[in-house]
Amino acid sequence: ASDVYKRQYLALDHDLEVLPVINKIDLPSADPERVIEEIEDVIGLEAQDAPRISAKTGLNVEEVLEQIVSRLPAPRGDADAPLQALIFDSYYDAYRGVIVYMRLKQGTIKPGMEVKMMATGATFKVLECGLMRPLGLEPAKQLEAGQVGYFTASIKDVHETQIGDTVTGAE
Image 1 (cartoon, helix red, strand yellow):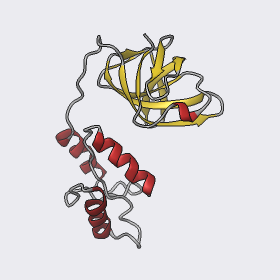
Image 2 (tube, rainbow, N blue to C red):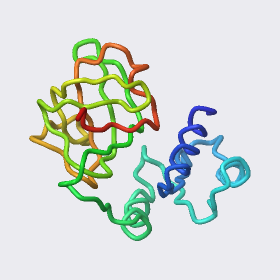
Image 3 (cartoon, rainbow, N blue to C red):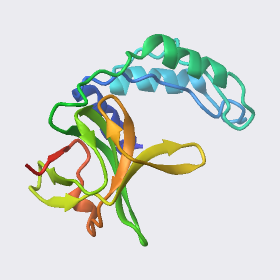
Image 4 (cartoon, rainbow, N blue to C red):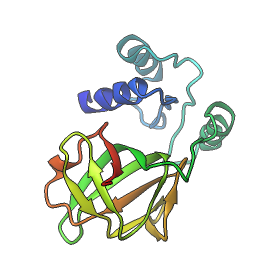
C-alpha cells in the first residue's frame, strides 16, 4: 500500500487532480468508512464524497465516470511546443522492452523521434506510441499535448524511466 501512497503524493506534487474511489464494497470484509478515514488522514484528500463502488458487480461505476467529467479539468497544452511529458508509470515487457506511461503536457511524440529522459540524460528513439484502451495498448501515429498514452523505445532497463521524470525531445 505504501507504493500507492507514493504515487498519490507524486500526483499531488505535480498539481494533478486525484479522485478517490472506494472499491470492493461488495466484499464481506469491506469497511469503507475506515478506508475513507485513512485516505483523509494519510494522504490528506477529502474522501467523504468518494464513490463507493464494486467494479466486480458494476455497482456505482457510473458515478466514477460522472465525477471524472464534472470534477477533472480538461487537458491543456500546445501541440506545437517542444515535447514535455510526465512519466507516471512504466514496466518491463520481455518482447518490447520498457513501456512508458506518460501524460503529454506540451508538444507531440511520434515514432522515429529522439527523446531524452531528463533525470538520467539517456536518449532513445521512439519505436511506438499510442493510447491505453480497456482491451490493451492501441498504437497511434502520434500523441499530442493533453493526451495520456504510452511509448516504447527498446529501453532495456526500467530504471531509465523514473516515475515523475520529464521526457523531452532530444534536441
